[in-house]
Length: 77
Image 1 (spheres, rainbow, N blue to C red):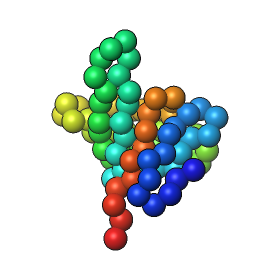
Image 2 (cartoon, rainbow, N blue to C red):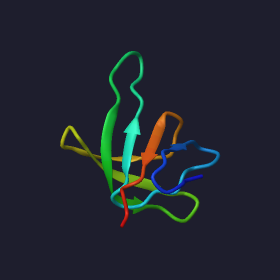
Image 3 (cartoon, helix red, strand yellow):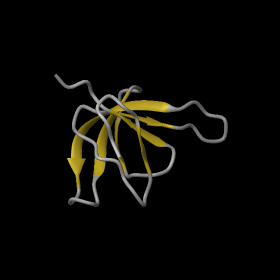
Image 4 (tube, helix red, strand yellow):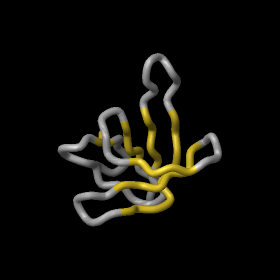
């Protein structure tokens, strides 16, 4: 589920719908700090999407829907 201006939790059973420009926050594991990045590309087929993300640490990676990952919608006008 995803509302305008809300935060959506991703998981493997009900992945949240994301768009280019939305932000991801990944929860840190084992006491590490979390990470934040912006979605720059949607990959995969409908229902099996994954995302190319540009992280605040200035690198890119591919992210698959998982527990502990939040989608924060970009403010749309």
